[in-house]
Length: 129
Image (cartoon, rainbow, N blue to C red; front, side, top):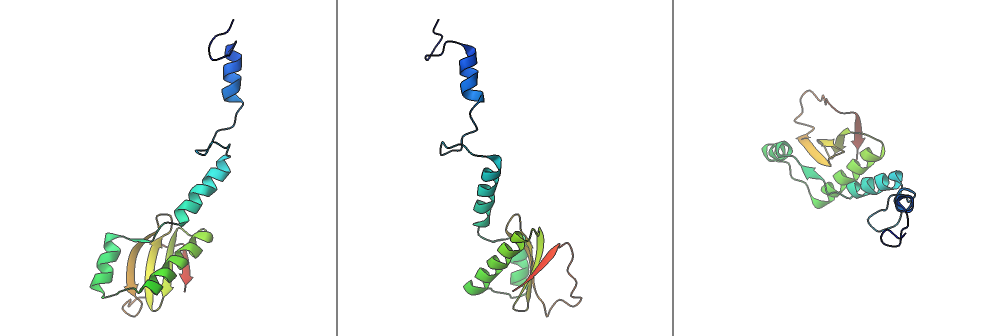
């Protein structure tokens, strides 16, 4: 007896769906590890963002970044990510930035010369560029 779509039993239907690996959006089968790597690679391509607080600190402290400095800050962020750092201090050209690596977001910014105590908290790594 032919049930539907050419299948003669429920076992054939379930076998067709349960024996196949999950398909990626492109239709090819994909492993969880591959999907995770793809997502991580996509996240690395994100542009660096500045939190509202960081934007206010840049303005208050009269700090402006050139395109070259912004590129170097993004490079420092990628290096921190490669080392598994979550909250990084990035030191560059007498400026200090605290960056949330996972969100690609600068949390705060300061001129190192204005930082009297020179103490940085809530970081788990530093990059000097």
